[in-house]
Image 1 (tube, rainbow over the protein chains, first blue to last red):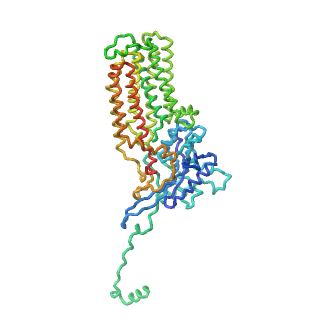
Image 2: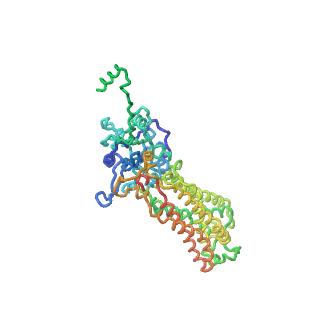
Image 3: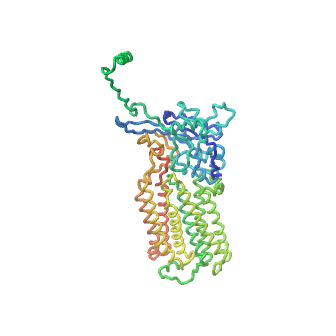
Length: 250
Length: 335
C-alpha cells in the first residue's frame, strides 16, 4: 500500500558527518558493489567500459566550495557531500506511487521498492527533491537505497557487520547508522551534540537522515584574540609579595 | 524536466478527447440532439451543410463519441510508452487512495462505461428523435468522468512540490481550459463533416473563440508570470550549507550524465521560452478565429487547418510545461 503506515517508533537512518567526509567515494563504491550482488541486485550499467558509461548508484558524493568572509578576508571551505535516500517520515515518493510498489516499512521506517510491482512510471523520482531514486533502463524498474536491509538484519553476519555497506566502508567514520527515533541511541546523541540538521525541511517530507555541519576551522580566523595580559606594578607591592612574584616568575 | 514525447502526446490527445466527450455528454444530457436537416440559425455556417458524410443524426453523434474514445485510448496507449514495465500497467489502478496517477487511471476507465453505453445505444436505436433518460444519464456521467480524469491528470503534476513550475495553482485550471478548448476545436472541425450537428456549431465556435480560448490564454499567461517569479533552487539551500557561507559546486559526483541529470536537467526550453510561449499563446488564440474565414474561403475541409493550428499550440504549450520546469534536485548539481 502506498498510503503511509502510522509513524513508527523505530526510525532507522544515517548520520553523515560533513566535517570528516573526505570525498573518497568509498561509500558510493561499496554501496554499488553490495547492491549489485545482494538481495535487490543486480544494478546493471549501460556501456560500462565505453565512452558514456551510465548506471544506477544509490549514493552520489558532491563536492562544494563554501566561501566565507572572515576578518582576514574571504576563504573557501571544501565540503564533500554524500547524497542518498533520507528515508523520510512522510515521503511523497511513496504516496504518489500508483501501484503500491513504493512503500515505507511500518516496523523500522525504511523506504523500499517492490521490484515485482513497479511499472517504471518514474513519478516517485519526480516527487523526490533529494534525487534518491534512479530508474534502471535494463530492469525497467525504479531503484533506490535499501539501507542495506539485507545486511542489517542478516544474522549470519557478525553483529558488528550488520550495518549498511556505505557505513562499513567509510575510512573516516563519517557515516553512522542507527535508530534516530530513539533519543538515547548513539546516533541521536551525536545529532544533538553536533547540531545535526535535515535537508530541505521546507518540503515537509521529514527526512530521517541527518547531516552534521563542518566544525569551525582552526586556522585562527575563528579564534578569539587571547585576553590582554594584566599589568602589575611590582614596585608598588609590599616586600614579601615582591619576593614571591620574583620566585614565581622564574 | 525532459519533455518526454509519450507523455506530451498522452496529455494533449487525451485532453482533446475528454474535452470533446465532455461537450458531447453535455449536449446529450441537455437533449441538444443532432438535428442535421434543421435550418441553420446563421447563414454564416452554411458550408457545414454541404454533403454531410453521415446523414443519420444518431449515427453522427455515435461517430463523434467514437472519435473521442479513440483519442482517449490513443493517449492512454501513448502513456504506456513512458513505462519501464508496460505489461504491468494494470497495477496502476490499485492505489487510488493516495496517488493521483492511480485516480486518473480509475476515472479514465470508468468514463468508458457511459461512453460505450451511449455508442451502443445510439447505434442500436438510430432513429431516436429525442434522447432517452438512460442516454441523458449516461451523458451526465460521461461529463463527470471527463472532468474528473482531466483534474486528476493535472493533479499528478501540481502535487509534485520539488518541481516549482508544476506545483502552481494555475496548473489545474490550465489543463481544464485547454482540454475544453481542444475538444471544442475538434467538435467544430467534425461539424464541417456533418458530425454531429450544425445547429449548435456556431454557438460552439463563438464560445470557443470568445470565451474558452481567451480564458486559456490568460490562465497560461498568469501561470508563466507565476513561475517566472521564482528563481532556481540553490545549492546552499539544498545542502543546508548556506549557513556557513556562499556555496558553489566545484565537482560533480560523476563525470558522465546520469538518470537525474538526463531526466531533470533539461535546459533548451528555457533558452527559447519567450519565442515558444508567444507561439503557443497566439496559436491558441487565433486558431478558433481562423476557422470561419478559412471555412468561408475554402470550404469545410480547409477549416481543419485551424484545428491543426490550435492543437499545435497546445502541443507547444505542453512541451514547454515539461521542458521549462526545474527540479529541486538540480540544485545539488549547481545547474
